[in-house]
Image (tube, rainbow over all chains, first blue to last red; front, top):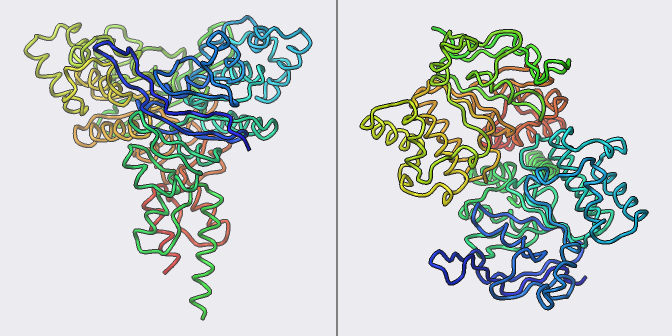
Length: 291
Length: 278
């Protein structure tokens, strides 16, 4: 597998040289391989948003480099527009960015700007709408008549329709009810599986990260703190709590069981695995009792 | 003892021409000193209901009484707004001044409170909300959780008897959410302020005295957190969830293990599982 995103010694300073110069990213390096689903966590102000806006060139590194699919983003600054299509960025509350008269036109806006022909645009709009679960009838409606969750799906479809190689989502489920969260994140996961594209998901919900991501990248005070497989990251619960983060509630239950004196693994972070782990341990216990 | 809030059979629609009711015959009674959480999926009418509690919206049918004052009585409006304070979802939309303490003082200045009293009241409010040490900072330099506590301080400086929070933690990170919830619990327990918290987070609702579940503009389920969360299947029908502690308990019960009902917290769940091993 080759690296899709390479970040090399990335440092970013807001207002460099000014009295209010603030370092937002400090010597950050990591690689995300093609086809991976990576979760980014970190408390407010840790640098998550500044980091992801570097992936499609909305920010230019103060020092260091970013490579997408092996190409340095800023090698030819006049070509930066290509990366806006290659890396699809879904911002927080993307429904506030809808502006067209119909959902169809809004989703078509990106592909149209890519200079695609009408037939290809149509194919992409319908496919993207299908992925996020928007019915063909909804496409002709005015997006402002839709519910919040539907609007958000229109906005995400608009990014998917550009068929980016990397999809970056900043808190796509914020403000949605549990079912709405599952619908949106489930659609992203299904899209990831179907197309094999690289997905980067920023979230405050440890439960969501645990459920959907393969790897987790933890930011803390402008630096990369941890970058590892999801089970290894949530196994470091004390460290995460120290960083002002949290672990899924189910992990906390296992930590407490350990504290109570039970001999049990604590690298548990999803519900099915928690149930399986407990079942195994309980059966073992029963076996011992019968002996 | 009179009720803090007595909303009886209220109906409300945003467009009076269309037969589409955002709140459709909901009743909510809140005792003084109670901490009530209102749960419900997007579009269930919970925010619309919340806006009835201090007369931002008036019901088309039914009545809302705030400490026995009818929200339809315009002469009482001033008193009602001072009795019930609201905190909304987005902290950035609620902050008007460039210095924290000036923001907290904003409402009091508008109410014409004498300046020596303002000083005393905002200091107390900022201490109660745990934001006193940031009083001279610019709000935009604070974290989301801190900003939300500035908004809460601004409301409690008016000395309301009741605080209504409309998804006040939705935009915060886990730590920010925790400190805001701690602040709210302290205000409720130590200062006796009645709290009505609208939320999507099951874990937050689990901390309330009572949980009210809304669906389709109606109250469909009500009880202690333990009573409400023991009905996982019903909650899922309303597009809601249960805390993971409850879900884990339910999954183990399905496998034939014996765990008590009404588990909602990490501690209760861990203790019950621990017992299975004894």
